[in-house]
Length: 236
Image (cartoon, rainbow, N blue to C red; front, side, top):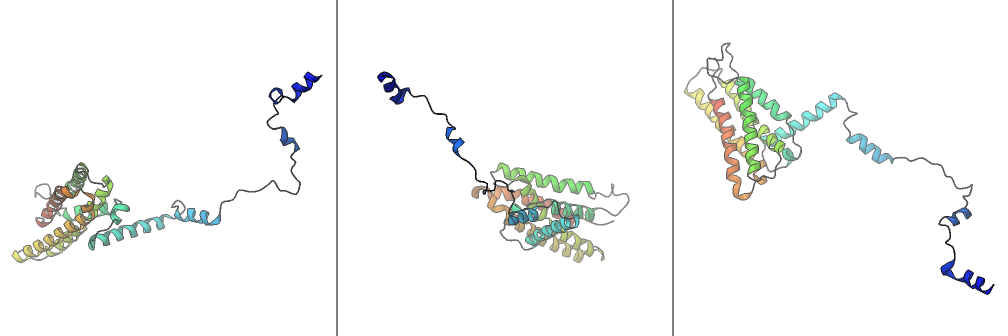
């Protein structure tokens, strides 16, 4: 009996206590509610509703995009160092400007294949191929700008040249002569410089300091080709 008592009092030989043995003694009072609802705070729900564009009408979406394009046009008309075109990039503005410029450069004669003038597809391809080439050159030089951001900036900066094309079309309604050509030349040079200044204001900081000249030179050629097409345009 003594040995049995000693063995029962030995802690190393006692049987282990069940892990959840004490849970049977715990009882839930009837006064404590165990039912409820998981609700989302009203403020976060309203914030998600406001930021979502799935529930807005098509008219509101179009007006919002048009306002965004108009703001980017203002940044090009008043060029200054800003990240608006880089942060909120889109290709709607460049597409509108490219189509408008190509339509104004389109010859009015029926047999336009023989007059040497640029066709709609030619202008469209020149603009977009040039913009893509400049973008790839910028990336190869180590620029910290994305592909579509560069396309956005180069496309929006065609706005001054599109205005120059509109002015030249109005000037060409008068009788041709040296004064007519000098006016068109002055307008094209001013708008060409405007496009260069506007594009470099957005793209200069995205290039390494020792390679800025290599990045700006193709931009100069790109806008020079477009300016030359505008200056040499003569309606039939």
